[in-house]
Image (cartoon, rainbow, N blue to C red):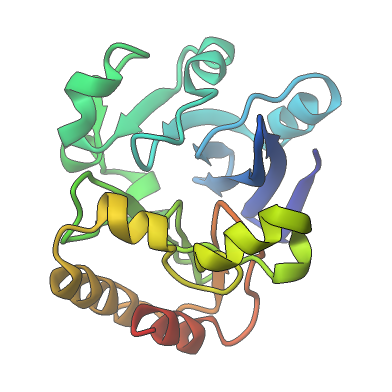
Length: 224
């Protein structure tokens, strides 16, 4: 696991996911010169934690949906002064795992809100937030889009990922089945959100980062 810099104030780190070939990715956003927000947090130790701490002080732990919470409690224990931010509708479910006093709907303000815009996607059964980092013009998504290639997998896993539409940029079949309750509202909301930004980079939590022509590729994925 290595922190990769994409912009002076934007980093990512990839890590394996236990018993799952899709892996996971944390984004690190630096704002206000010396403070950090961790999106989809991953527990770091040793050299990698030391490097993260050199970047600044962790102020926010961003939980984008119900599932990307594997290391949230452990990361919160490392940084007890950091605020965990969640989608408000998930409070009753996630409060069994960690402190859920802060939500995007009520506490998203100050320097972090100026550096990072947060949007709720309509048409979903459960909330998922997507983020736009203004300085780097990067859209950060969680499970909304996958972006693998078929060569990232082999054997039966490759076939399963292809059937799930995970080997191309877009929303997987599993996500459409388990999360989308109103396809028209879902696509309309995505289109409206993404058209509101000049997106040059797309950072999904699963699959390859897109560093060129991201806006057009996202639009194509929405309507595929």
